[in-house]
Length: 88
Image (cartoon, rainbow, N blue to C red; front, side, top):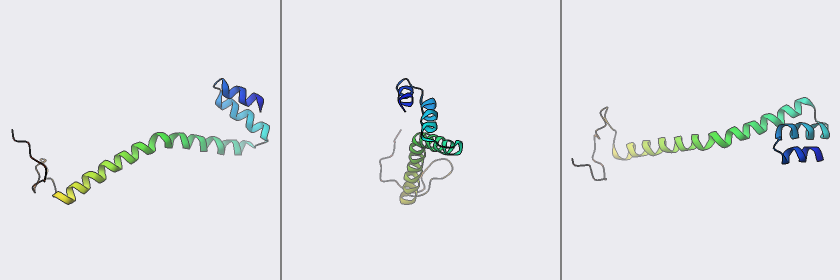
């Protein structure tokens, strides 16, 4: 495990995982499961906030439309909004 820790310190995470797995006696299948779990975690840390943000915006827009009326095809509200309108 000393070799694995040294590899981690110099930025060789993949090689450190391999060495640690061999030291612990893990099978190739177990190593693949661990690798997939780590990959899945990394992807989730990137993708989940983006998905949550998109859903939040959609929910806010839907709530606004349900509360203050639908918007027609050219973007003009069919009901009055409580917010002041731009008067150009």
